[in-house]
Image (cartoon, rainbow, N blue to C red; front, side):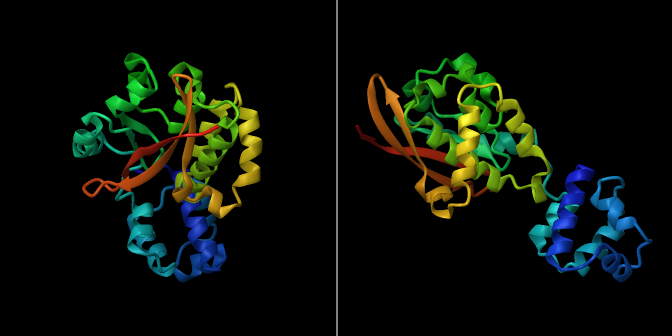
Length: 251
């Protein structure tokens, strides 16, 4: 069952969007006084019948209903993860392909052999990165990714990526998950600078848009940029294959 606190935040978001007070929603679905307040605070789990009434009254789309009825599990199951990896494994093993697989929670599930080799990452360490949030993998020096970033561009690159994560892992659907991840990052180098920069870039839609993703790296002493492309998997749409391509030198 979905986390009651996350469920409550989603219902509150949809209710406020519909411009209904808690009392108005209670009255329209014949609920007892204070029930909606208790649901939104995560104190009670509503019955399926109550959920159906709320969804109907708030005129939710099928996707929005799914977010309430937990038709999509909170986190991907092992079966979903295995299926997603199988769907993209041919790409991940292809020589020269630079990319990695993440789910809708920004959790890393696989990385291509060529990407691991290019970044000179220890395979054993990368195995420990599987199942971690992508921001943790970026920020934590023990994973080795941050050492490949251009230190002069690192703060801005990671701030834009963090702003995207913040926008996509919004509290209406994901509860306090993003804030929980941020707390894990506080002790790492550059984090405070990056979070300060996030506040400066997050309102810039063009900067935060997926189409402008680019990384600045230093590989074997040479500065290069890599563009990013995101593609949802056809059979497993909760997952995305992130491809890094078009390496270009810069000064």
